[in-house]
Structures are given as structure tokens and as C-alpha cells.
Length: 64
Image (cartoon, rainbow, N blue to C red; front, side):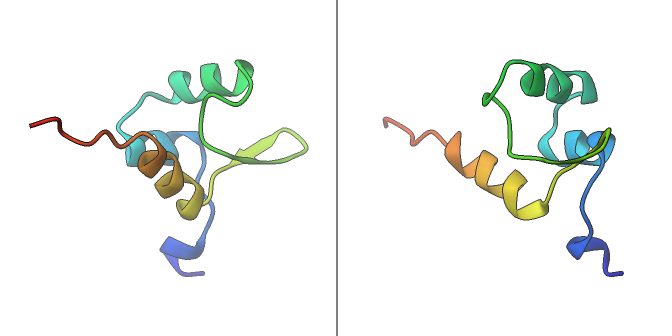
């Protein structure tokens, strides 16, 4: 399977976002604060598309 098409685990998603895996876990426990994720049983996975959407949602335009 192509690496970019595969869903990411917590540690991979955290690295992609520049956050710690614990921060992603905290976001999940706080409801809809973090990126969208897929949960199958106990497994949590993130798609690259959802992580990129999360980054775009938090983009701040410069005021200068």
C-alpha cells in the first residue's frame, strides 16, 4: 500500500502535525477540538486529508 494513502497512527499523525501523541489523545477526549479521526474498535487512525484540513482550519492570515 502506498505510504501516503495509508491511514496514520497517533505517533505518525502527531509527527505530521508537529504535536505530541498525548496532545492528539487530549484533543480526542475533549470532543471536536482536534482533527477528524477513524475509530475501529480501539484502533484510532487519521487520514492525511483530515490532517491537512485540520492544519488549514488553523491557518492565520498575517495582519501586516
